[in-house]
Every structure is written in structure tokens, then in C-alpha cells.
Image (cartoon, rainbow, N blue to C red; front, top):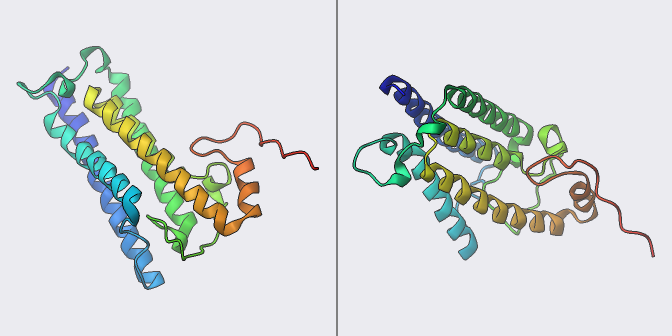
Length: 213
């Protein structure tokens, strides 16, 4: 693999990290201006602080990998796997990265002022079921996973796989917490929503309703 190709891969990964998290900051500021308060940006409780720490590691890893990948003298965990540095991975990774971010912007548009980063137990927001939320309960998290999978395709190194795994673990814990909160807020309507949607992937068939009596 040429140094030019490696540089192109590194540029896409770094650029995607900067654009994505700058976009999150812009979204948080936009929603805060519209609702007149923070959209639950700060973590509340020990579990959320641990999740935020995990996501901070993911963000830092996403931004640092392009600088570290392939550099001589570093551990093997930061060395690309030559057999996986295929041109098809470069193309597919770039396409998935673009698709993941486009999907995220779609979610922002659908959620509007109901977008939140954390959970406020005293707040009741509208249940959003339009667009991607009609099939998946947490499409923003799903699109994040798509983008980190793209990172792995662009820079196929063990550290990228570890970052993807850490992010997925954080997402599953956070999604379960959000679902428990929304179930307590919306009750039966959210139970019906759970039955017809998947957490990160579309449900192939609706869940069976419990038999009466």
C-alpha cells in the first residue's frame, strides 16, 4: 500500500471524527437555544458518568488513530493488518462513513427539539416514531456504529476493533436505560413501539402480543 493511500484513509477517518463531533456540539447548541436550557448534556449519576468516560475514550481513539496507525515503533495493536488493507475496504469504508453521517443528520431533522443527550427523569418529551424511528428505536446509535465500522475498514488495526467494541457496549447500556425511562413515561404506547421496532436493527417481524387472560 502506498503512503498516499494510507494518508487518504487517515484523512477520511480524522475528518469524519472532527465533522461528526463538531456536528454534535452544533446540534446541542441549536436545541439549547430553542428550548431555553441544556438538552441534558451533562451526565447524571455514576452510570452515566462511566458511560461518558467510555465515549470520551471512543472519541479520543477515533481522532488519534489516524495519527498513530502505521507509525513505526508502536505496538502491534496500532499496526494495520496488511491483508485487510484492500482497495475495496477503502471504498466501502468511505461510503459507509458518508452514509452514517447522512443518516445522523436525518435523525436530527426528525427529532427536532426533542433531541437529548442524557436522561432527565423529571422531563417528558414527545415520543418520536417518524422516519428511521419507525423501524429502529436508536438510529443515531446505529449510525454511529456504522461510522466506526467504516473506521475499521479504512484503518484495519486491532485498536479500531477495540474502539468499535467499547462503543457498542456503551450504546447497549445507554439504550437500555433510555428505554426503561421512556417506558415509565409513555407506558402502553411505548410498549407497542417496543413490539414493532428493533433496538439497533429493524425487527424482521413484530413481537407477539401476550395472550389475554
